[in-house]
Image (cartoon, rainbow, N blue to C red):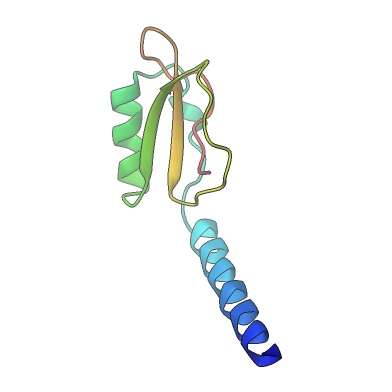
Length: 89
């Protein structure tokens, strides 16, 4: 049973190392998009990171706080402009 635990630990460790290595080679923040319309911002993020799941949400809405290496939250004001630095997570 101890061997199975070590095997799963090793597999999970390698997975997280892979995710971190992949993130180190791609853009994970877009400060230049603050103030830009959400549709244009989403397009730019998807150009930089095609595998991203870009979620557009009003600035005051609560969102789930778990880390997802493929998710980018776009918080927008009532006019649809980005109001915070979009980042992976």
